[in-house]
Length: 294
Ligand SMILES: [Zn+2]
Image (tube, rainbow, N blue to C red; front, side, top):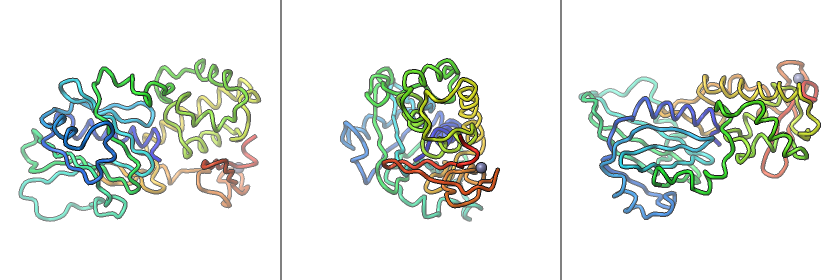
């Protein structure tokens, strides 16, 4: 599932590429993804609106439109957004055309856009979603925070509001809980999933199964710094493409090249040579080095 760095990459792409464009039309062959409205009502309500910009909270995407409306998108397991445009009179295919990759072939929703860029003939925002768990909701911008999924979200993991004191407070309140579960609980800290939970805990030298109360203050500080450090590095590398995630050009991210524990079970730790282990509780896996992490 795309986590904070992947969604942040998408947000910055959207703001670079479609801010100021107008929605001309919308098409979908999977209207189930559109919550609380029929496809036709959704289409009618967004047509003619201008895209003011995109923002994010945790893994949730908000595309603000003119007239006080916001499209809320959750990519869930395999969703990603593609922005395609055709340049006038251009016949040959672009070099490095990632759109033809298999992973980008599951387009179920298309926004047709009108752009001010006179060099372009057509422009679309496309939602590719292999497993079709993604969702799209049109809301009044001023009521966005009242949505039940949004209301309960915790502080965003790279937001300035997420201070060490706040983090410490979360650990105090959930002292019996395993640290891996605290890091991934979107209602406590928004944005971290399986990939970055494992990488952050390796960076901090803490075992995923440790209870919050067993983590001392200096370890908590180290862990807090690792959260910021790993997520910022992953944003810089445009996220992790270990399976379906792609950016809006259809291109993979780069963080999978520097993963130290995630999906590396039975391989040697890059730091000490010990074999990386995986623990699975329920649906969720954590990867760790039994020697580097205590
Ligand atoms: Zn190690």
